[in-house]
Length: 244
Image 1 (cartoon, one colour):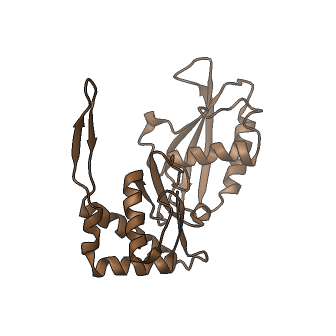
Image 2 (cartoon, helix red, strand yellow):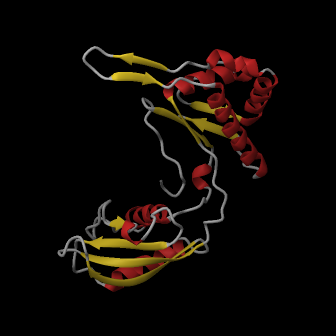
Image 3 (spheres, helix red, strand yellow):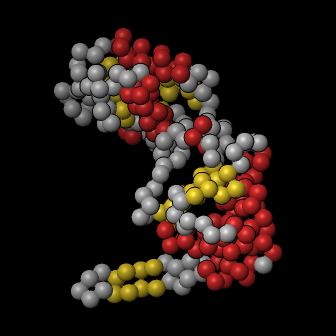
């Protein structure tokens, strides 16, 4: 996962629901998130990644030193260019710390030989401070195509009107009223449930459709309610939820 905890999912596979403007809101960052953030900083903020011979595999959360989803730990930067000395890495780390001042502080440790490849030098970096770990994580929702069709049709029937099942924008006030209508008459969800099925393809695999239960639909509604509550608690100006 990246820093914003958000990724666009392929339309053919699933549909993601997220709060408009969430890409500008700081959320908790674990070691893997920080590695990805450092990679983006070097390539897109400093613009020196390619010049220094870095690629997407150059920045690593060093899984051998602990869980990559922890808030602290070691980061490795693999140096294909063995002419890169500690002054360059220290400069990058100092600039990153300024970039994330008050949130993240990294500490350069040393450069030594990689344990995986003796032809590589490795810069060792420690996450010294991580003030994001107590931040609130934004609620998001990802559902399969078929479940998105059912959920959007359900919301449309209860007040949102005709909506594209794969991408669009939900106004929070209208969405809130649609959810109130659903919870007042929860039997309206029955139409959108689906039994689990199995189909054996001749000389092929068995295709399993896990169906859609009332509990599953209710979980989707509950996450949408969490998103509405977050928007209202934080007075977010757009007041919308995107999906796509």
